[in-house]
Amino acid sequence: MNFKQEELVKELEKELKDRFPNVVINGYWEKGDSSIAIHVSTPQDNAWEIAETMSPLSVDILSKYGYLIYIVPVSRKESLMQAA
Image (cartoon, rainbow, N blue to C red; front, side, top):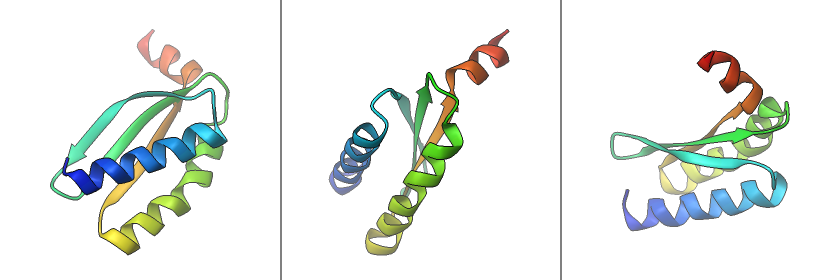
């Protein structure tokens, strides 16, 4: 991850935590030089709301800087069911 990508990821994370304070950031997936997924989990059943709320910000980053940085939300209930 280059400096600009790191800066953009931090900005997106801040916005995410401001809007959804209960989310937990689990890590990142980098694919190629210009794509980063931020994997988050939420204790509530609002993964779709997170995706819908944060995706316009990801589109803005893509159009302004050419980096695809996006949120991959999973509710903790879903992740616990998949692990079982």
